[in-house]
Amino acid sequence: MSNAVEMTLDKFLAKAKQQATPGQVTLLRRLYEWAHQEGFKIHWSPEWGTEYESWSFAPCLPEEGGKPRLFWARTYGHMTIPFDQLPEEPCMKELEAECRRRLERLGIELSAPKEPWFDVIRLGEKEIWDGFVRTMKWYAENYRKLKRQPAE
Image (cartoon, rainbow, N blue to C red):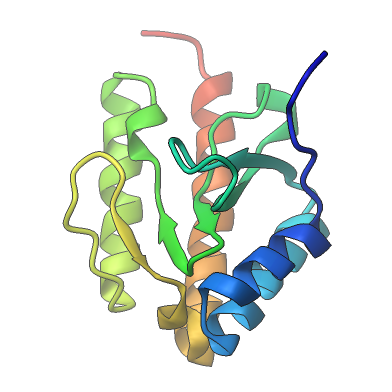
């Protein structure tokens, strides 16, 4: 018998309403809806060590077996970009570096090396939102291209 908990958007948002501000909850919903509309697979996960107190969702590429996860959006209003999941190939390191540059030009500071995080509220301004989703689409498209290229 499994004690796994199945997550849905409604359950996620109910948990987020307990842990995040109303503005953060609105942006978390928008992120989910954007990812769903763009055709990304949604991966749900409880936070480690929280016994299902906090949850995350991550849009990922369905054709790549759930990798890469573009970002983790968490019920408490933080987001991480899991660059640590990228293969240790020079072309993937270049992809990461360019993604970081694009996000930092938007004013999204990514100081942590492996899984930099930021508050989802940063996406509340239209210009930053538009730039973020444009960057995530670019990241996914370029990951796909790089995975299709033969190894050198």
